[in-house]
Image (tube, rainbow over all chains, first blue to last red; front, side, top):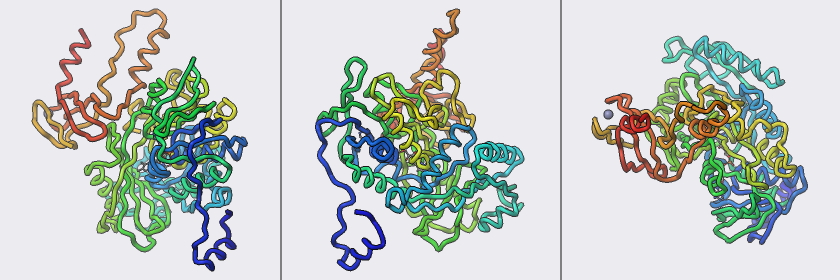
Length: 417
Length: 96
Ligand SMILES: Cc1cc2nc3c(=O)[nH]c(=O)nc-3n(C[C@H](O)[C@H](O)[C@H](O)COP(=O)(O)OP(=O)(O)OC[C@H]3O[C@@H](n4cnc5c(N)ncnc54)[C@H](O)[C@@H]3O)c2cc1C
Ligand SMILES: [Zn+2]
């Protein structure tokens, strides 16, 4: 059923009792053309674009828990394309363009709010880096605006721009098209659309192994039994190494926890997404009024979807120093998600040494914004057995050849990116 | 999380910095004329990790304490620490 003003009215008049289920709950079939392992944002987007762009619908998405239990439902909802490496700018800007039309494409409101993403800087060296990044973006036709201290104050009055601040602010780089998206709606919207196009989205079905013969994948073993498939596409974010190992892959990935924190709700006070320059810290106000913070990774390998207190304390200290009026807010909740951190901080979308087996992962803590482009390019790879131009650099072999995509220049220390 | 440093005793996490997976071994000085032959060993050491969910042998530096490098065995799903030892003896072993 299409959501529209008319269906809203009709259901309002009949007491909201006749809305159909948003998606089916199918039993797995014995065989599919394509099996996608992992029903996070990227797996569901891949399913949608397999159907929409390539007409491939004999597909199952196998999700070990419920839809949205992973990072797609745990992130801080920030979307932007203000990267430095040309491949990352092009990929993420394609994603931003897809976000711009996604609600109407999916007939599901993902609540994109292009309120602008502002990264402030505090030192002349950071200012130079911001200008360089802005120019790299402008070269590809992406919007970037350099702000001085006064402009920052005008745009976000609650930022402490005084000379007395602990880390005085010199200015900022603004991407006006950046913003935030309702993350759960992205999982639900893609799932609903994939389902409507005939794809089986199967929850509570954990993949426990792959059937591989003579270097070719023939299917998967799951908690609901064996299922055959011509092609299998891994898309499991924080559990990439574990699922990869089932197919004999050893990956340049470590799993690290990132926390998010949300305060008690307050009236609208912040209509821009802002990040601090003196430490890893970003804040966005949600539609419910809570201020959603994120900060550093906890800093060591972790599969525990919860974080430590010292990282929380440091994020709170950043908040209070950046926007002193937040100092008296109470933190309501904090949670963690397991991020698939690569050795260069950039993602991987690739074929594997096993024929018919594909791998998508290594999204670090920045893969929400890439969800549409990830699905778009992964579907292309699966359908054609050839990488999409926009993801052609996201290989596994780049680590051997030295063509890494290292935004921050931190080297092979996944916890530092 | 508390780490039981063999020199200082139990100390809180913020005194330590993480040094990553302690299972990889730096390849020895090359004897191959063709550097390509060493590539796989270097690739493995620099980039590839088992990244287990469960016990993990890893380096920690007691940077705000005795400054020793330690090898800690910690469960990555519970953060329960099983073993802590100085890293120096292992470094010597590898050199010899
Ligand atoms: C706290 C936090 C804040 C973040 N903030 C941002 C942000 O502001 N902007 C941004 O761009 N990115 C952000 N990210 C990163 C972003 O959320 C992730 O990169 C992205 O969601 C990962 O892709 P996904 O949605 O497919 O992952 P997930 O939703 O984690 O999907 C993977 C799925 O695979 C399933 N799975 C695992 N193993 C199996 C198996 N064996 N069988 C079947 N299914 C399996 C899991 O249950 C899970 O549902 C953040 C991440 C975190 C944790
Ligand atoms: Zn010590």
